[in-house]
Image 1: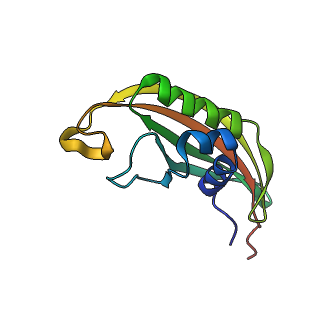
Image 2: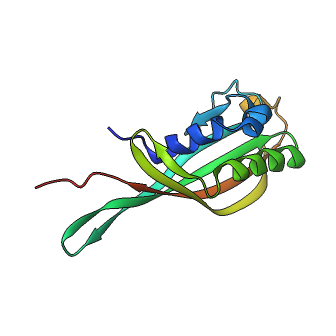
Length: 144
């Protein structure tokens, strides 16, 4: 089975020295454990589209992957987001037997209140920077 597009994002990010210097290995799929200490990153696939032609499947697709950076400060969250952007944007290569390329679509910032001490922030609001990436990938064409 080929690697999933969100796992490509995680692997490329963890292979980058600036990203691991900022967050270590604190990249989580879909949700972080409640004990996670900022800064950390959550990677979630939002959707995927497989390309088709009149003759059938084209053997390629695009996945939209959301990358959320959490930190206690706006400056810290944006610094991690910038390290991720530098590592991911424009990356092209092969992971798990699948050719892929990554494009940054957008990024935004907001304050996230954390009641009852959730997300390791001691009940204080933390900052989130959300980035949406498109991961273009090839895949085998199903036979009928």
